[in-house]
Amino acid sequence: MSLTLAMFPGQGSQFVGMGRDLFEQFPSVRTCFEEAEDTTKINVRKLCFEGPEEDLKLTANTQPCIVTMSVAIWRVLKNETGLRPNFFAGHSLGEYSALVAAEKLPFSRAVWLVRKRGEAMQDAVPPGVGAMAAVLNMPADVLAEHCTAASTKDHMVEVVNFNSPQQLVVAGHRIAVEKLCGKLEELGTKSVLLPVSAPFHSRLMEKARIAMEPALRESTLKHTEYAMIANLTGKVAAPYGVDNLIKQIDKPVLWMQSIETSVNNGCEKFVEIGPGKVLFGLARRLVPKTSKIMHTEDVRKAIADINQ
Image 1 (cartoon, rainbow, N blue to C red):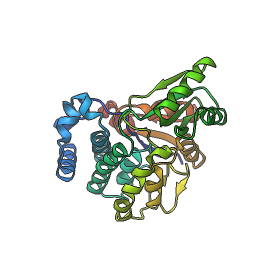
Image 2 (cartoon, rainbow, N blue to C red):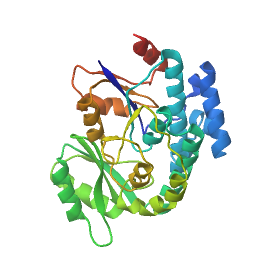
Image 3 (cartoon, helix red, strand yellow):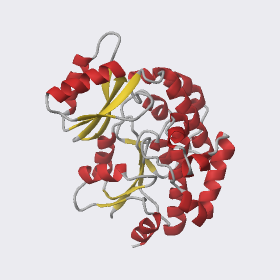
């Protein structure tokens, strides 16, 4: 039997205008946005539909907006197609969306948590102090050695996202990240600084983890039939515990390991549910060529594809 993995994107997938057309077409989307606004006390609709971009990309705004958008699309797909994935996974922030879809965490609690998570992450490292960069086509062990060489007692950089064998992400103090990128350029390895406001998933997020732990400990996660693959381990978490969300804040995202786990468990269909198609692109590099991979950039097309 062909199994399905539902994938939910993280920060960086947002864009001004996302969700505007769906809001008009599907009542479940309106309900989702209204619930998010009631919970977070921010104007999620305005941020998603109108921006401005500089406000939408603020971490404390981005996180609840992406989770709201992802869950809204999930509800549409579920209502229109009866989609019942066998496995759920989310990239970083997307793990909260995945937990909602897997019926382990109420949406209102999830969107409240990620608003607090965004605030805690931004407070942990002042703007301009941290940075992240994507590194292409360098083995993880070799990149880790270069990170160690670029780090000092006061400034560190480390590998934080294992997205695919061709794409890793580093994060840390801006000074160390830029030093690393300069060295990689000398070696002929391409790296790109990312337009983010904090060094997510690095050790510099320890303060954010400590700040978020009480709220996460107070969050009840239900045990449901749906299997969650955790960022923290890249494996099925059975049962899925709140420690996965706590430790995820300042630990690396093991995404390619997560996709490998889904393939080893029999997944042949992969659906990215949320804005953009970043995970769709990564999946094309990570899963067998015979797999069916879909995204929801065009939700009506996704509905048709799933119904087929």
